Length: 152
Image (cartoon, rainbow, N blue to C red; front, side, top):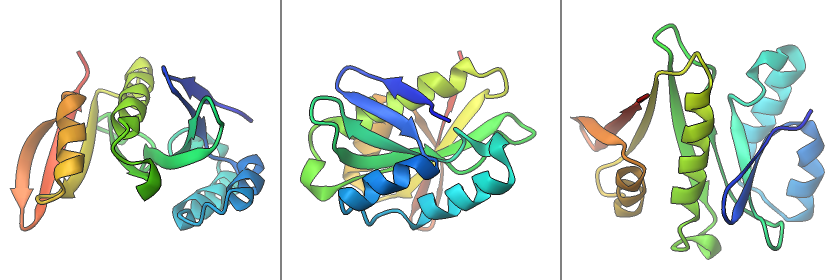
């Protein structure tokens, strides 16, 4: 099972068991949520693509972070997205490029009409990324901002 999205500089790969050796080889230890997703896939393969994706630098094919959905689209045709870039790879535009690629992929699916995200009110880097991909802040609660983008 393989599912990839190629952007200008990145390769996004939907996480599944065959990617675990690459994560170990690269000492990518930011992945407890990926292990949980791999276990879920063993029980229900319909979650493939609706969990974490590795973000790889296309030139060097090394992991720069991960991005993904927090489950399949719900009854309102909504998915929540999240992402994280390794500190050594930040400030290179990877989060914006990967997020736009995954948003485009999601909106190509018939069952996605809205994508949401949440970030801390003081996470300036994430706020810039979310603004760049045309997500709109819709609610502030305590220290969190909820964002959304609707299909065209």
